[in-house]
Structures are given as structure tokens and as C-alpha cells.
Image (cartoon, rainbow, N blue to C red; front, side, top):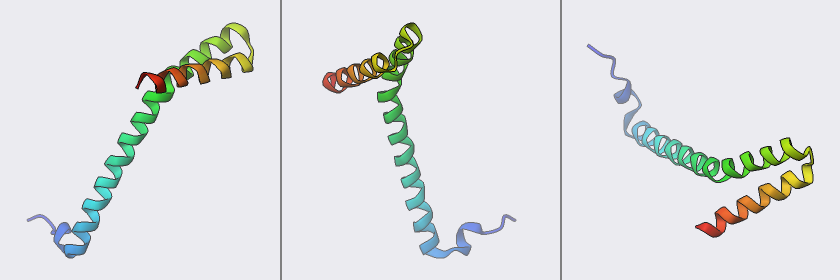
Length: 73
């Protein structure tokens, strides 16, 4: 009834499929964690830059918020 796509690759193909699926899930989790770390600092830096139009202050605000989030852990 259905084509046997999973069986046409054999055991090696199935193991490779599972390994790539696990690798993809790990990469997605890593990206979400990085965004969770960078997003608040980026928002604060954007607000500081919009208020002051100074890249140095925005960079310092980004570093300060990033350092506080590291120390909070």
C-alpha cells in the first residue's frame, strides 16, 4: 500500500536518519538557548541606542546585561 521508504535504505540508513534527527534537535535547542541569552541584552542595547544614538553606550549596555545574565545563572 505505502512505499517502503524506510526499508529501502536498510539498517544503516535508519541509524543515519535517527542520528541526524537527534543532531537537528540538539542544534535547535542550542539556538533557542542562545536566543534566550542574547535577546534581553539585545533589546536593552536597542533601547539605549534609540535613546542616545550612541553605539558605545549601546555596546556597554549589551555587555552589562549579558554579564548580569551570566552571573544570575
